[in-house]
Length: 266
Ligand SMILES: C[S@@+](CC[C@H](N)C(=O)[O-])C[C@H]1O[C@@H](n2cnc3c(N)ncnc32)[C@H](O)[C@@H]1O
Image (cartoon, rainbow, N blue to C red; front, top):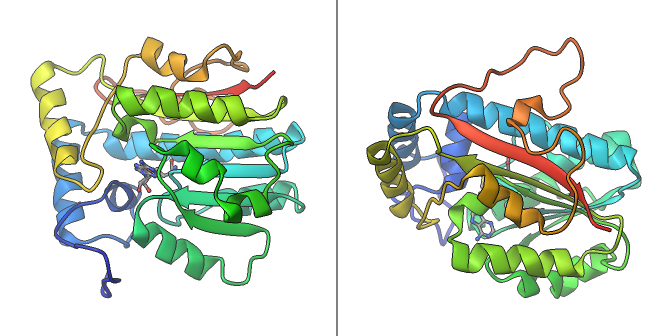
């Protein structure tokens, strides 16, 4: 990336740009590439995890459009890549409306550039740790009707938030969702990594703009869905979530775990 927008310190890696690098993108700085290389040393399959996660995101949005969802709230949007949420949603349901929310100013700069002519999509700055500031943001409430079902996407974002903020935040979001809403979550796990590797990984993200990495067990990830039932196939390796027949499979490998699932709000 050549130009550095104001408010950005290019010497501090950001999760969005580390992830962009893992996905093969170009919107990253030297600090992000160094952090991502360290992640790859610790978890050599991190690129596959990122790709599997993206596939889950695309399939979850497709699935939600098939279930009649026409409003999407994507918190922790990340930098634009191939097949962004609004492109998938609008391809399957042209009357969809999408709100992107991220707390990284560089993500907002890119999203707004991409969306300049797109009336069905807005991008707002917001922090998942303060869900009311998202749900009560007039830009959000003007664009989508929270009284109607929403597809809430919390994809590869909750593992940057410690327990004391993450669980209450998701509970507040769940409480505000209308019946028929769908909640998609994917989340890093490190159950089969040794403690030293986990600690070193946490240090990489402790020095990033996120300030933390919190891998969780499958059981602790499941708790984010509250009482809502997961649709088939449940909470699984992201590329095993409704992969269509004939599609190649990104294998789940030792030391690179991630879980993904979708629940319906009743
Ligand atoms: C790994 S990327 C995931 C992008 C996309 N959801 C995906 O799965 O492909 C994580 C994103 O979450 C954002 N993020 C991290 N903490 C956040 C917070 N507290 N509130 C909002 N966004 C956050 C980061 O800026 C980054 O863009």
